[in-house]
Image (tube, rainbow, N blue to C red; front, side, top):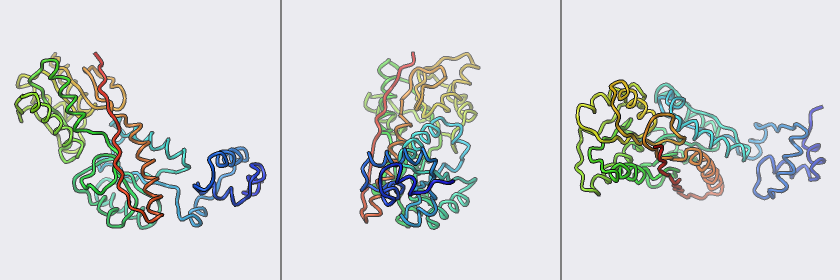
Amino acid sequence: MRATIKDVAKLAGVSPSTVTRVIQNSSSISQKTKDKVRQAMEELKYHPNLNARSLVSSYTQVIGLVLPEDSDIFYQNPFFPQALRGISQAAADHNYAIQISTGKDEKQRMEAIYQMVYGKRVDGLIFLYSMPSDPLVDLAIEREFPFLILGKAASPFVSLVDNDNIRAAYEATTYFIDKGYEHIAFMAGNKELVVSQDRYEGYKQALKAHQLPLDESMVKFSPGFLLEDSSYKVMKKLTKQPIDAIVTTDAMVAEGALSYLKEQGLRIPIITFDSVKPKIDIEAYVDINALELGRESFRTLLQIISDDKDGKQVCYRHVIPHKITKLK
């Protein structure tokens, strides 16, 4: 026979109404009582009806994740799986499910977001990318729907969780300058992405701070979300001039560049950004801690959802520390 709320309440030694509030993750219930009730639910294999619960609590217990337009990058770039892992861990701790929104173009993605927001299918949204002008973000703002950006927001009134990418790129470039290198190239992906712009800014600031000239011919961006083959082609152009070292914006860029260098029998020191130790032959990497970026994104969104229910409007801006790890 299927277990009921009354069965859970009896085993946990609490009232049925307390079990209901635990299912709703009510803040009025102590963590000790929540743990006791959840243990009873597990022993009895009791699974609440989420749809019925949402009608009572007005919460769906689901958050939406909005992926970049070219969603193949989600599976190819190690940043996204790590960030998703962090979000999933934090969501599981709070009994939340995740719904992923994607689409082959902006129209499909807009339709998916529209259904999530206006259909009240999720309690809030996390955008796993950041662009200066994004109609999907505009929709969430206009609807006053709870959301945040995992990345840097163009508006000072949008909540975000991010690294200090300007500072990180400054330190990455300085890492090579301190070794006596002067001809330092910069390779990035889509120039429209805020993360690319910020890391380029950090690179420029480091050169300026050390009285090194900025040579635009040593700065290369690629359209779309950069894959290994496009960075391979970019590297081919860069090697037509003397280069001491290269700052790349992620491991996929570095891997494409290394592929060309190996083919040509060339060795140029590279530093990149990643969230796990890269399995490629590079000098060092900036650990951006994507796992914690994901966890903090969920925790912050949960607070935004709570604030929204209480009629409060607070802009949260959390910066996750980075560190440079030497590999040689």
